[in-house]
Structure formats: C-alpha cells, structure tokens
Image (tube, rainbow, N blue to C red):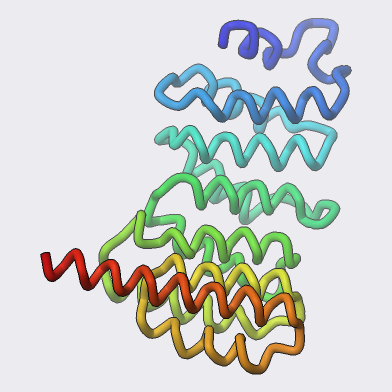
Length: 219
C-alpha cells in the first residue's frame, strides 16, 4: 500500500502525470482494493480534484472511490455525475455511476435512476441498470424498490440492446415478482435474439430466487 500511495502522489517533476495512462489506470484501480483505510481514499480524492488527462483514468478514479465506501465519496461522486464534462463514450460519467452503485448508499438510488435518462450514453445507462439491480442491498423500503423497478422497466424502452439486457438482469436481481411480466415481454417480442436469450435466463433466475425466498419464509 505504501508504494501505491507514493506512486499516486505527484512529485515536483510531475512523474505521475508522465506515466503511461495504462499504468495510471491500473494504479487507480489498485487503490480501490484497500477499503478500511482512509489513505487510499485521500489519494483518490486528491487525484480527482487534480484531474487526469485520460478519460479512462478519470473514470477509474471515480469507480475506485466508490468501492472504498468512504464517507466523503457520495458528495464527490454526486458532483462528478452532475458536473463532469462530456467525454468519449461518457467513460468518465460511467465511472461516477459505477462508483455510486458501489457505495451501497440509499441516496445514490435517485442518481442511478437519473442516469437512465435518454440524454446519457448507453454505457452510462448500462451501469445504472446494474446498480439499480442491487437496490435490495441498499434499502428494504418497498416504495423505493417500486420506484426502482418502474425506472428499470421504463429504461427497457431503448434502442440499445446492451441496456435492455442489463435491465433484464437487473429485474432478476431485484427479486420482485412484478418483474416477470416485463421479462416475458422482452423474451417474446424483442427484435434482438441476444436480448431474448438474456430475458429468458433472467426469467428463470427470478423464478428461482422467488421460490427460494418462499422456502426460506416457510422454514
């Protein structure tokens, strides 16, 4: 860890800035593996504040910050989501969405729903779908979970097959019986065979999870 922190600290000669972008991205990714220690979060927060000339590194910084679940992360990632300039494939904003999804913070759900908006690139919406599928790890409030399910279903109405596939998986992960209907429609009517296959798999997964839930309740 000490070596990683030293590498993430800019020197007077700008050694970090001169490093190959692939190395900087790997360094940012590695810092996200040390939860329980505030120093990696300090380094990532300082790096985000300084900025990086690589969009992919910028995205990885946000992604890793979310994995650490530092108390300061939500405010920073929420600001990044709202204010990050447009980048290639919206890779920077996608990193912020991935980071928000990793926080397991109920406040992030509203932002993940916003990330499904048609103004965002497909990769951002795919990441938002993945994050919303984990909503039961964040809240047990049924009204919130209903909002999440409805947002996922609305988000299925998109041209991008990757977003539709991610939405199908999210409905299975959400473990809501009301997700079976939308999944059945996708499995039967979607024009993309890959999406139909994913929807069928998601239907099976959802039914299995619901059945296991009923068995656990019976016990």
